[in-house]
Image (tube, rainbow, N blue to C red; front, top):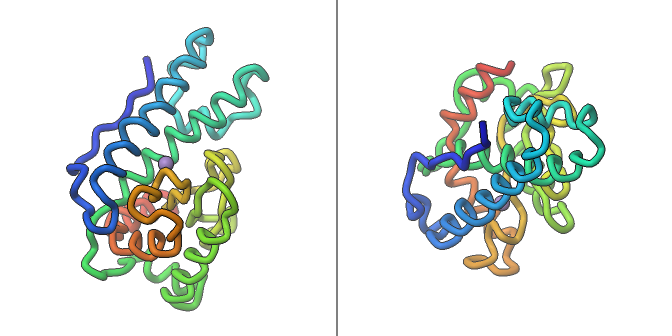
Length: 203
Ligand code: MN
C-alpha cells in the first residue's frame, strides 16, 4: 500500500487573502506531493514496512533500518506534518479555541493571548526551515515547541494538536521576507473546531 497525497476538502483559493492560491497549489501538489513520492520510493525495497501507517513509521523512527532513517525522517515527516497542516485550516472569523481545549489553553498558558504570543514567537524564532507546534506533553499539559526541517513531534512520542509550517515555501510567493505577517495572517485560518476535536481525541 503506497502512501497517498491527501485530497484537500477545500479549493486552493479558499484562504485568500491570508494564504494565496498559487502558494496553496504548489505547496500541496509539489512540496507535499514530493515528500509522498520520495517516501514511497524509499520504502520500495522494504515491503515489511509498507503496511505501516505514517504515524506508526514516524513514532518508531529509531527502529527502522539505518539506511532508511534519513529518508523517512525527512519525507515521512514531510508527509505527516503537511497532512496535519491542511486538516486544521479554515477561515475562523476571529473565533478562538472551544470546549475543553479553551479550558486547557488557559490552564497551561494563563490566557489565550499569552499562548498566541508564545506560539508566534516560537514560529518566528525558528531559524531556517521548520515548524511550530502545540502539543500535549506526557504530563497532559500543553506546550509550544519547534522542530527543524521536517522533524515531527510524533517521533518524540508527543500528541500533536496543531502545527504551523514556517518553511519559506509556505509563504515566500506572497509574503517574501515578511514571515511575521504570514504568521499573523495564519491565525485567521486556524480551524479551532478541528483543533478542539483533536484535543478531545488525544487528551
Ligand atoms: Mn511545507
